[in-house]
Length: 377
Picture (tube, rainbow, N blue to C red):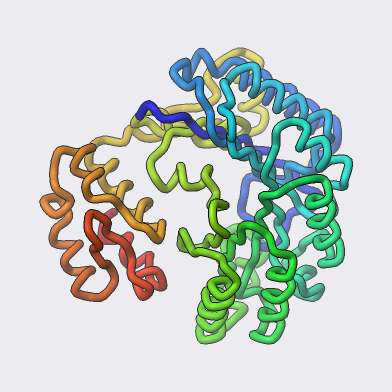
């Protein structure tokens, strides 16, 4: 696509696994973390053998897990490896995820000195009871202090992750959380409804009866949209809100079909029309790095049909929708020639709207987006 790529780096370590989390993460001691970082740095250096065409980078996202569990020197080693391997473009959005209570002013100062310019805090709730039920390791007081320390260090682009539908949560407690988060004035807010994932402690407890009834969950969803809009946050994706100019460019790369390379255990890449995935097993991942073997196996060849499908079900996540002119340029056919039946059906149902060359979800369509996406899979 001849566009700069994104880089994702997976740090799989946590202080403690949360009760709802199904991510590839676990508790680990300092020796295991150090060994992992050494191999991660090596993998980044070796990647010019597997993806030599990827040289220019305009977004980096260090996620997990809890990346902020690493020491400042370990984060520095990862950043140095990136700068040696890639040309990091001026103005690159460089994000690190942080759990409150796992980083301090020294860490934030060090991150800024390494070129990291965006931080994402996993706050989830401001209610102590809800945080304990989720298995979070921090209090809201610690989250607020971490946020203020990041501000004082100089971070001008901060995201807060927020969750609704938490066990024991009600409209009063949720609105109190909204008030407190909005008072902090982050540039970006990711607001998700709790999903009960198989294989988690929450699945055993709540799989037959959701922790919050459907009507309350719906009210939380509606009040989130209203309050954020009133306070100047533009909803640019189903679950993401940002002030002007602060939409997450890295995540937009996923939704717009951009290229990205993932490093670390279980990380995914998309280069050209092939999707890759790194080994999920820690021992296998380290063995491949040490033997200088490709860490990412081809997972899926995206043929023309798959690419067109992704164009719609990923692109429609964005509130601006999909560019029909771009679709025709890429695939040599009108979107109505390929998906005319689905598009007309969804428009007649009030789920899609066309404005000029753009096709986007209506407010109702955003509310039931999974129903729309199924039409393009």
